Image (cartoon, rainbow, N blue to C red):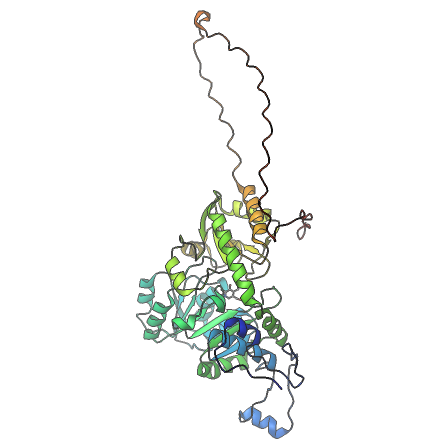
Length: 462
Ligand SMILES: Cc1ncc(COP(=O)(O)O)c(C=O)c1O
C-alpha cells in the first residue's frame, strides 16, 4: 500500500524525488510507466458514470494517464501551483495556455523578447483568428504601462528571455496586467522552477518546455502548464482533451526520472555558467557578456530580486560578426553546436541564423541580437575543460598578430664619411642563461586529470 507523504511542507529536493508518486498495488520503488492509450471499465454503467464525471476513472491517455498524473502532481507541488497539465512540447504548452483562454476580438500584450516560435504565435497565428497583439520592450516599464492602459485579455512574457537574458519586472507587470483585465502567462524555461517562482510575483499561469532542464539529458520533448485549479479544469483541460496536444506517457516517465536529479544538476550548471561568463568578460575577442548575476548585467538588481541564481545560460557577442561567430562555433571541440538548451552536454547556438532567424533582421536589431551573438547553454562537464575549449576556440578567431610595420623608406642625404659614426664593435656572444627552474606544480585537486585526455573523437560528419 502506498504511503502518503508527510503532512508538512516539503523542500524542493524532496518534492523532485517524491512528489506526486502513486504506487500501484505492486508497490514498485520507481514510478510505473503506464504505456497504454486506453482504459477498461468494470461495466457499461461505470463507463457512463466516468463520462458523466460522477466516478473518477482514467478514460483515455489523451485526457489523462497515471504516469502523466504523477508528473503533473510533482510539478504542481514544486511550483506551488494548484494544478498542472502536460503537453507534448513546450510550444504546445504556450499555444494551449493562450488559445484556450482567448477568443476573436481579444487583445494580447507580449514581451518583444520571446523565443522565436512564441513570437510567431503572437505576430502571425493570433491575428489570423482576430486576436491582436502588441509587443513591448521587456525591460521598459513605461512601455508596459502604455500598452496596458487599454483593456487586454492576456500578457505573455519570458524572463530571463531567450537568447538575450533580458528580464521583466514580474510584480510590476502583473499588477498592470490585472488592472487591464489580463491574465499573465510566464514562460519560465530559462529560470526553471528551482530558480524562480513567477506565481510569487503575481503570475496566473506558468509554462515550461520540460524538454530542457527537467529532462536535462536531451532525450524527450514535453511541456507543462500550471495555474489555478478552476482555470485548469474549466479552461485549459477541455482545450487539451478536445484538441489533443497530449504528452506520451513514456516521455512523462522520462521527465519524472529526470526531475529526481534537477536539484543536483542545476546548481552545478549555474556555477559553471557564472565562471564561464567571468572568463569570457576578460577576453579581448568578446564585445559583451550577458549573465543575470554578473554586476554588469543591465538588470542585475532585478535578477537578484527575482531569481535564486543566474541560470545555466550565458549570452555573449564575439567581435567580428557572423564570420567570427561561425569560426568560434566551428573551432569548439567539446561543446556542441545545437539549438537546444538545458542539457547535460554544453551546447552553443547562433540565434541570428537558427532560433531567431525567422523573426527577421529588424526585430533582431530591436532585441539586440547581432550577427556576433552566441547563446551558451552550460552543461555538466568539468568547467575547466569547458573553459579550455572556449579559450582555444577564441584563440582561433583572435585577429592575426599585427605584422611588424615596414619602416617607410625615406630619402636621406648621404652622411659624409668624415662625420660618420664608427661601426659598432661586434658584441661578445652572451653567455646562455641557465634554464629557469620549473614552477612548483599547483596542488593537484581531486578532480584534476592525472592522465592526458585521449584524442578527441572526430566530430559528426568529420
Ligand atoms: C523559452 C522557450 N519557450 C518555449 C520553447 C519551446 O519548447 P519545446 O521545444 O519543448 O517545444 C523553447 C524551446 O527552445 C524555449 O527556449
